[in-house]
Image 1 (cartoon, rainbow, N blue to C red):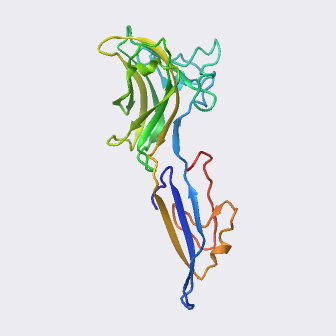
Image 2: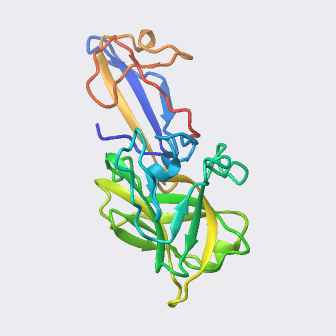
Image 3: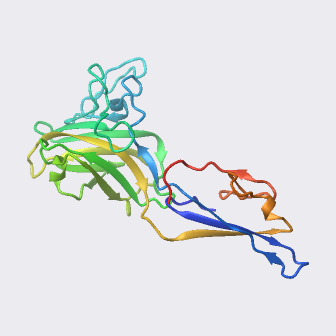
Length: 272
């Protein structure tokens, strides 16, 4: 059984079979469950003012960070014009008022007046496979400011740059906007790094600040569904699954032993 797709409804039915009887098959009830709509890459809720959970220790910016007990070598940064987070000695390191979801978003300041670009990069502890579960897109929410200078926003996935396809003037809008990034044709089977950045526009540098939130993996909505029919010889399926319980009589990722119900945790995210 392949990995289940996001934002999908799956149906299954267990039929009782007895070749000694006529009819030999007694159809069971039809059951279904829905999978979550998206996977979270980063919702920025886990970052705090204290090391080793400071946002700029995960999302490396132009300045880097100093050494401490958790990071004896520190990090010299990438030399770009970016800064992420706020000074933890002055208050919350994360933005807590302009948020898209949850209670936090990531402040990102860009300054291309001296540097030629501004970029922050997160390196994942282990490679992420973004080619599973029918994933087709990466979504990112951003919030601008009327005082921002328009620059070319982009992301890099394993170093492959994808330019923002909206107008650069959107960086001046003080509202949450979603950027839906098509992953079709990109090599996303082993993602190690994700970058967010800003380039100069026509050679002209500028500065500003945006808030970043809710980076997610998703798939296009679909009206299709997947059905599973299981024939169980001489077994009363009604004893295997009782309405209202949280057990499913089939392990959709492997083999199933008749008569043994498998407890399957359901994700708490929104499902269709």
